[in-house]
Image (cartoon, rainbow, N blue to C red):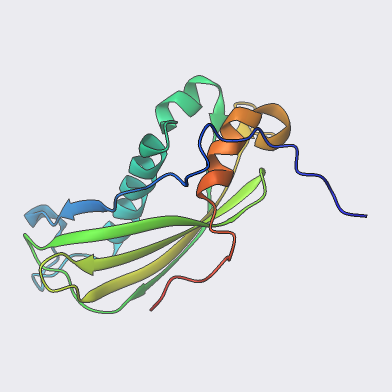
Length: 161
């Protein structure tokens, strides 16, 4: 027996078009060798994730105002080439897995000028209420669930590396 999808139909049949996030590498993000310190890529992933949510019409701030939090469960980051001060990095963020309770995001970072691949990364998140209890967006917030589901890459393909 198949399970019927009860999500609210999006207002449009077209997928939401998300533009990539761009970050200009700052001097303070460099390390002693003059390259961007590895910890900053995780921050950039968060910036790109927040930007994606804003573009889909549901900011992280709005989510927190609804008493929904989304902590990071895990992060995986594979560094392909170095980013230097003042390089512009284009970060493509997309939802790789989503079930209403957990979400896996993929990130592909490239140099804006050359197109060279810099980093491929993933982060996993869950959704909790302010008491720290897991919640299902599908059940509790179907309008939000629909927004996430619309962006979910149903093929579940890994980001190219």
